[in-house]
Image (cartoon, rainbow, N blue to C red; front, side, top):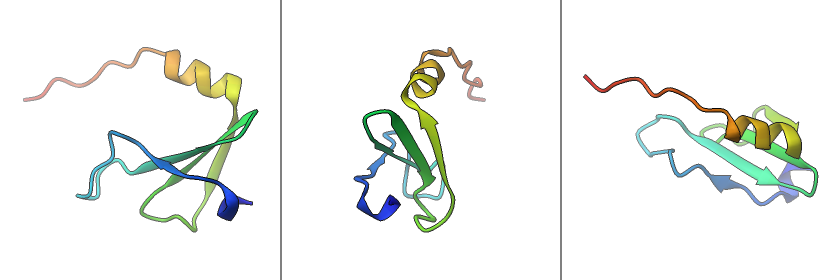
Length: 64
C-alpha cells in the first residue's frame, strides 16, 4: 500500500542527514516514514491523532 501513497518531505528536513521525515495523507490516516529509508518502517496514525500532535506546543532548544 505504501508504494501507492504520495509522499511529501517535511519542510524541516534537509539534505545533510538531519531530520528527514516524509508524510502521506489519506482521508482518515497519516503515514510517516524516514525519507532516508523509504522502504523501512511506516508509522500510521489517525487524522485526529495527527491534528493533536501538530497542535501540541513544543519548546525548541536554544541555539548556543
